Length: 143
Image (cartoon, rainbow, N blue to C red; front, side, top):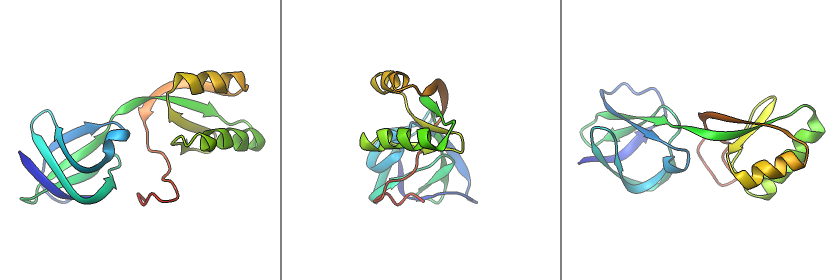
């Protein structure tokens, strides 16, 4: 089993020995055993951390395991005007839903109840598959 106690958010110069593909929720880690296609990996961080797409787990023998974000089923909410954008942001925030905010859309993880609510409220929505990298919350230090 490979032991990991540190990570890098980017620009890894170490030898990359493996990759692990994780969904958004699975990229919050503190102490956990993960399985890549090649290895069992024991994560032992001092505090909980969020690993973004293309970050790196650093092994105890100074090698790296690349973290790849898995594509997930997403609701893409198209924003055609600022008022509708503010309204949908309020609905999402009121439900404490993680959101990825773009210039012309807001993306959230797919939820059939939220999908129906958004359609009923008149928003233009699409189901897409993509990597989900939402904004951090007020107490989330993943920047």
